Length: 103
Image 1 (tube, helix red, strand yellow):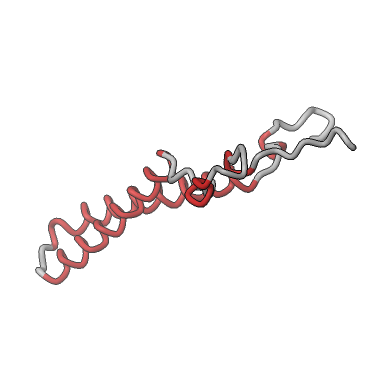
Image 2: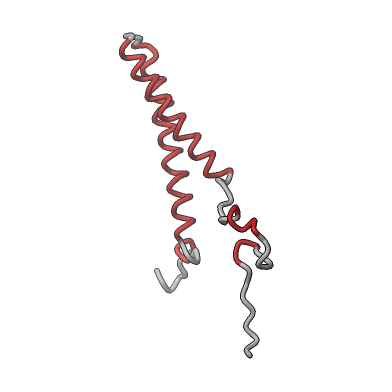
């Protein structure tokens, strides 16, 4: 016999543990992703406010609504891109500063 010991999957310790079906490994959405999605929702809300401002011909508020919408879209896209990039990068070597001999 070998010394190999199988690691329990989903926290199942023995064959009688019937609760493994509910343990699928999903931990939920973390706070940073939730914040990014909230920023994206606010961006779409501001886009809807721009539409309302144009349909009601409230031209004074159009500039400010556009400014808010552009800001929310900018922040949401950058934060979602950073979340996606950090989850797909393997070692973070792309963030290391270049040495003098590399330049």
